[in-house]
Amino acid sequence: MNGAHTLLDTLVEAGIEVCFANPGTSEMHLVTAIGKTDAVRPILCLFEGVVTGAADGYARMADNPAITLLHLAPGYANGMANLHNASKAHSAVVNIVGDHAVWHHKYNAPLTSDVPGHVRLQSAWVRTSASAEDLALAGAEAVQAARGGAGHIATLIVPANHAWEPAQKSYDRLAPEGLATVADSAIEAVAAALANGRRTAIVVGGRAMREAPLEMLGRIAAGCNATLLCETFPVRVQRGAGRTPLARIPYFAEQAIEFLKDFEQIILVGAQEPVAFFAYPGVPSLLAPPDCAMMTLAGVHDDIPAALAKLATRVTTAAECPRQPRIVPSLTGTELSPGAIADVISAGLPENAIISDEGITCAQELFLRTEGAPAHDWISVTGGSIGQGLPVSFGASIACPDRKVVAFQADGSAMYTVQSLWSMARERSDVTVVLLNNSSYAILNVELTRLKAGDPNPKTLSMLDLGNPVIDWVSIAQGMQVDACKVETVAEFENAFAKAMQTRGPHLIEVMVVQNLGVPVKR
Image (cartoon, rainbow, N blue to C red; front, side):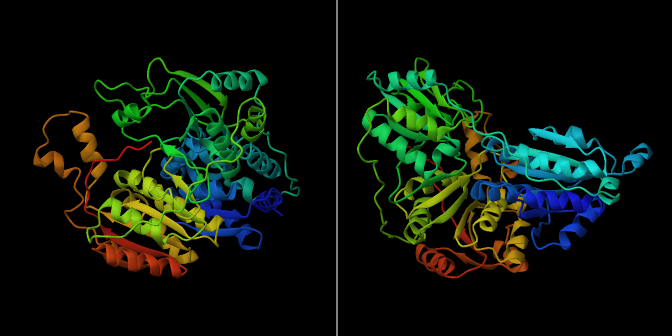
């Protein structure tokens, strides 16, 4: 036995079933250990941003961490952007980062780097193993830390010699820190606010967006005449026909300010105060009216269901939760506008599907038009760092292999982690990528205007143009053994989407979108 084997035995005992990996020399002993067990499924990804994004998507849907296997500080650095998203989503992720053998550091080899300095940027818990015998305990503690509260990123740094040196003892699962209990005073304060007659919004985030808490929130909101809202980029919201309806706060600050302007008080449940995504000249950063009272019922790491159960005994609740009716859109016209694309998806989405949203400028349209789609889970780019959509949909498909996953994906951000397509093909993941091709970083064209940075010239616009050269998405996907086609009309998209929904395995549908950059606002 060596340190790698005792670590792996401990991780299996702790409930780890999946390893998303992009390993290097310093991780070879752990790779060997994984190869000798059927308990952990190894999944190779060709870029660390795919590794970390997939681990995020897996955690959101499995409610259990996967491990990532990363190679020193540069490997970790390649995965940082999607670890940022995972951190904002409070996803449970266990990173295992290999490092040089302890005695090798002093020689300043080419890959010598400050691994602890890198990993602390996104990790809530960091530990470097002290010896081969210590490695298994460190692994048990990493899983324990990742599972604490609503979820955290935990990173274990493994000097290579600790993996190959002799070790004997593995460890049982360690109990994680549970969800915190909400104080009765907070529940009483919210109950009083809901009875004061002021126009109220309840903004939900985190695990408050799951079906059971939303149903209770729906009864509370209906009984107290409050409006139920979700964060702009929800971690995972269970929505659609038969479930509790709720509106989403718009992305653009000016529209969000208009959307929230009439509310006199906002109650936060697993969410933070609504703020603008970026700063803009002359636009407030806080989106609610200045005189709007802001109060928190429960934070993201609090026991939200228990707090809601107590709140429900102190306020007027509706006998039944409002239910979203099924809405089957009429498919008319030929032009592939964002609305028409969304209608096709809403009409053809199967029950219990998962939508991964990185549609950027088209995303709000899809959210609105899938309100009445069959019941589904919606996950989005919670931290705002693009390049998440493809890997998070891949990770979701690994967590839920019997559910259809639809990746609603903008073309510019897809190029960040295009290697995801290869892993989807290798694992035969049931993901359909709806690739929105407008040959532009469309959102940046909008932001360029909103920031009043001056009249753009051709040189300026060239930095936002993806049409020179034109990206051939069908060829890229087919080159990675993913079934792919291009559609230019509503009828073509309807047929291609229906085929993908009826056929297992990865598909990519390149949709030549005709886009009006105005984004609808609805409450």
